[in-house]
Length: 236
Image (cartoon, rainbow, N blue to C red; front, side, top):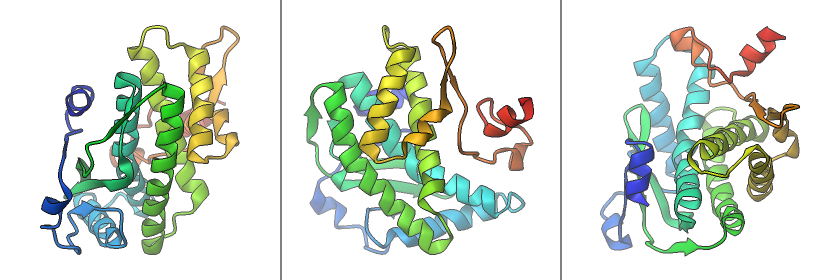
């Protein structure tokens, strides 16, 4: 799993670590997200580093970037494991590393890998990822307003974007599979069904994907992403 993750994204580097060695870290260490209330300090440190690195980007950008950074690794790991190996690691003891103004690096404290049918693994992934991501949202919401609707849009966009990547990598995974699996993920993660509207089937049965969230990258480079909702609005 670790090798495959690094092949897909070189920054996606992790390891297994037994619980005893993890106890060497202090509880209030702001370099790690450990799934407890001390994560709030880590998230605050992340935002402070973002503000120092990009002082003119604005609070809306810092919030969007922070939320994306909190969520991207667990979702990518789940997708790579499920669709690449038909297995799922145990996210119940999962830690992420803060490296200055980024979240890069992760640790699993349990080397159990659940094998099974992809549809079953999606359900299992949702049962673990949904509470983990909700925990991050609550911690961020204590620092600045991060409501469920806002957070859900970003999570759904990460999921849908990854499904489009799955189509590029797996032979036989087609546009109808994207729609089917999108529904499975939305149900498993407890996301609103209306977010599925981001995936627009064409008459030729291909899929248009227009994000419902905006990462606000134009605040730092003046360019909009190709699937940005602002691009779609401008075209209309």
